[in-house]
Amino acid sequence: MQPIHKRARTDDQKRWRRAEILRAAEQLFEEVGYEAFAMARLGKRAGVVKGTLYLYFKTREEVFLALYDQALTRWSYALAENLGVGLDRSTYAKGFFEAATQEKSLIPLLGRLEKVIEHNVSIERLIDSKRNFIECLERVADATVTVLNLPADQAMDLVKTLGVLLVGVSAADLAPDLKEEALPPEVRAFIDSFDSKTLFIKNAQRIIQAQCAEANTGESPA
Image (cartoon, rainbow, N blue to C red; front, side):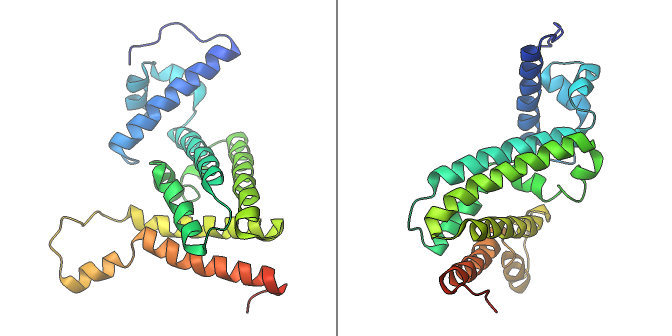
């Protein structure tokens, strides 16, 4: 990307500049990952000097939070639009997970969100992010009401619970990649049992079943 010398002065110009920086950040993150991501590298990729970069994002964690917000929003729209009436538990669980994995930056950032990222951003940015999070959950919950025939409050509880599960299983994706390593069969089998997709779908189905049973009986599952 060529350096951008003209200073953004109007609100529209600033929004455009911020969007361009985030596009570059998303590309850089997909290429180098979390640890190697640096503001200097981002400035070079985005074509802006480092000082200009800090006008829009005070820390690299603010960049990560913005990328997370974007990915979460896209995930919520994609999932809500693709949920069809009468889905079974397995299909719903797979759709929930696969919509998240299609956003390449979502799960890697989700696993670090509460441990690192949210501790290194301003309270204003954190509040904005939480508001976006609420909107995304409501979007998916509204679709879930129809799909699984759940009351609105239980649909929201389900989406929240599956979100927590997604955070938990995302930790498996932060482990070293040992796919190409020669491992003893029992060690390979043990590692494979922690596959994030398998863990999520298996446990998500149980959670959905419990919520649907509660909706049908009007009683909380034991």
